[in-house]
Structure formats: structure tokens, C-alpha cells
Length: 445
Ligand code: PMP
Image (cartoon, rainbow, N blue to C red; front, side):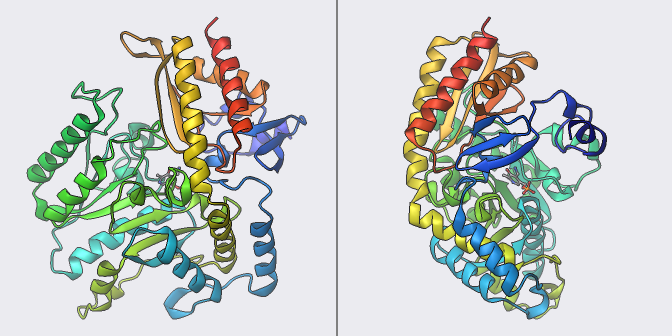
């Protein structure tokens, strides 16, 4: 297996030659919040798959729903009006409970990048229907991650995901992220920083011309960029600025939807109604590739009432509304509601964040600790005073030592990221913290 893995499997988001030197993570099993590798080690998955296995690896209702649906209707597209019972029920569930008020329509996709791509396209189409074809540009946050397709890569705020693929979509501009530890304003007070970033957004809108901008896209809590929760005032300020300038607000909730921040969605967490909400990942607990773009009723209405023909220029996928994905999602969402996992995420998240802050007091290598619900990160530095990022091998060594001590964590640049399943117990959190401590000792010499 190991040899063929190196020879034949292209590993996304890794140097193609790295598959041999990475952790021994050829996986063969998963149960509860644990994964088992080919060498028989069982470790606690503090990555939660990829922020998506929120209900763990033994979620029987989702497995059963997939199997039942395969026996009932294994596939049919919802292209051009056909529908299926599961997507109808799912749309209702999403609009009724999980999405912020007013997001009444669901466009189904096969994953997060698709949900983002469709949101960007529909945003332009919306303005065009309304006679504002000049509104084509997109604004977003530096450090943001919005998927791997060309549209998403264009609004991504990290060169690592962009530079090799130029030229990208023209007309995409980025403003500073509300990242307290490092920002161009040298401002560490979260409330003041939120105001400065909001002012930067206003400036950019004025510079570009409001009438040229289609949408602003943001993650309610920046995730893959290193977990950067903004001050609670930030997203409401963004909403107000967008409203004042006729700009649509896309909330990219591929990570934050379905409980991870401690609320049903990230926009709800901050008390905001976006015009679009992109979801995927945890919608099926990671068991089936599926996503949903939630669309505000007032946006959908513009499409419905269009008589110019622009609304019928279509975008859609062979797998839009896949009945197996929809059945898996219905079962996952029912479990999320039954177990109130967002409440557990809030409570366990506080324990995890508190424990990481305790470790920061003891280990100089931790420059910053951040978190919201069960998305947390520690940022590793080689020198606290200058905030110089740690050498590249430091987080990898930490990861290796934590893995050997029974916990899988994720490394992104000089950050170690924690996004365990939302069903973790206090004991699981204690185990994660003790493995991180083992890793910190290993890198602290
Ligand atoms: N948006 C955000 C905020 C994400 O975190 C991700 C994936 N990490 C995506 C979009 C892309 O989703 P996918 O990998 O399912 O295409």
C-alpha cells in the first residue's frame, strides 16, 4: 500500500513527493472520534476529517440513510424541474432551522468549491437581471479560503492558492482580515481592528466604485487561513456597508455552518442575514460529497420575476440534488438537532481554548491562541517579541509527536489547527491537550 500510495496517488494540497515523508496516515478505519491507520494505531481525530465529520465516524443514522436511499432512488438529477422527495425535505429543513432568516432557497452542489462558484455566478447574474451589468467585481478578505475552482481561487486571500494559476478572474480585490495577531494597522484590540477593517472595505468600495462591485464574500470565522475569529461587530458592520452600497453579501460557511462556531451557522453566530450562504462539508457529516448554497428569498424573487431571459442562462451540475447526498444530509442534520452539537461545540470549545491558553503560558513557542467554538488554532513563533513565524519543520514535528501520542492535528503554515468532531467529550479535550503538550515538549527541546 505505502509504495503504491507514493507511486500512483496524487495528494492534493501537498508537494507531490511528500506522500512518503508525511505521517503514516494511510487510514483503514474510523469509529466514534477515532481513526485507525494501516499500522493499527488508533488516534483521536482532532481534525474532524477536514472540519466536516462533526458527528464522528460511527454515525449510524447517516450510514443507514445512505444505504436506504441507494435502495430507493440511487440517482436522478434535479435539472430543469425534476425533483426528489429528499431534496424537497432537505430544502425545508435548511431554510427552516439552519440558515439565517430569509435564506429560503437551496441550490445543491457536490462540495464547497461548487457552492462558492455558484454564489459568485448568481451574484453577477442577479445584478445583470436588475440592469446593473457593470457590477462584476468581487471583494474578499486576505487570509480567506474559498475553494479550489477558478472563481474561488480568485477571491482566495492567500497567494499559495492563487499564484500558480494566474491569470485568475479579473476584478477581485482583497482587504485586510480582522486578524489581531498580525495586521497592517498594528492593532491588537479586536473591536478597534474590526472598525479599521470595515473602514478598509469602505475605502476599497469607494476606490473601485460601488457600482462596479457584485459581492463581498467572507468566512464568518476565517478557517483554513489559521482560525481568526473577528470581533462580533465585524460582520454586522460588513452587512451594513454592503447594504448601503448595493453589494451582495456571501457568507462562506463551508466550515462554520452546522454548529462548529457554537451556533447553527456562522452568520447567525454574529446576528447577520447574508444574501447567500455557502455550505458543504458537515452537511452529510463528510460521508457523501454534497453541498448547498442557500439563497435569500429577495434574490430568488429577482430571478423568478425576470422577463429579460437572463435568469434562464443556467448553471448547474449533473449531481445537483443527488438523492443519496440529500438523504445523508437530512439524517446528519436531524442528528445535529437531536444532539444539539452546537451547544457541545460551544462548551467543549471553551475548554479547548482555555487549555491551549494555559499551554501558551508554559511554552514560549506559542505566539498566539485563537478560537471560536470548536475551531481553534495555536500560532507557532521562533521569537515572541518579534513574532517571527516558527521554522517550517516545527509544526510538523509537533504534529508527529502528537500523532505518536494518539492525536491527529492539522498543520497550516506555522499554525496548528484543531477542529475535532462536535461530539467530543471533556475527556477527549483533555486527551487532545495532553498530546499537544507532548508535541510542544518535543519542539521546545
Ligand atoms: N470555502 C471554505 C471556507 C472552505 O474551508 C473550503 C474547504 N476547506 C471550501 C470553500 C472548499 O470546499 P471543498 O473542499 O468542499 O470544495
